[in-house]
Image (cartoon, one colour):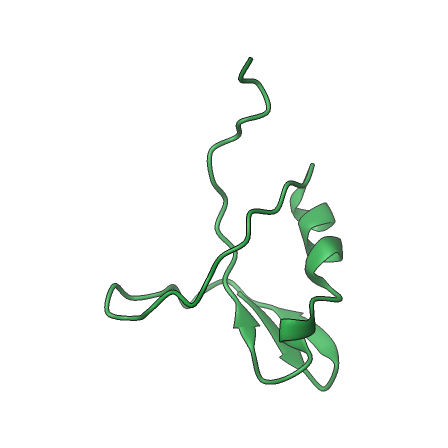
Length: 65
C-alpha cells in the first residue's frame, strides 16, 4: 500500500482490501521491477493528500507473442 503523508510516499505491506470495500478505479502500470514501480508512483497526485494506492502484482504478460 502506498500512502501520501506530508508530500512524501510511505510504503507498507497491506492491509488488503476486503470484498465489502469498493474499488474507485484502477491503473495498469508496466514496470520492470518493484523499485521501478515505486519510482513511477512516487509523484502520483493521489498521494499528495490523505489518499492511498493499493498495489497488486498481476500476471507477467511480457512473454506473450
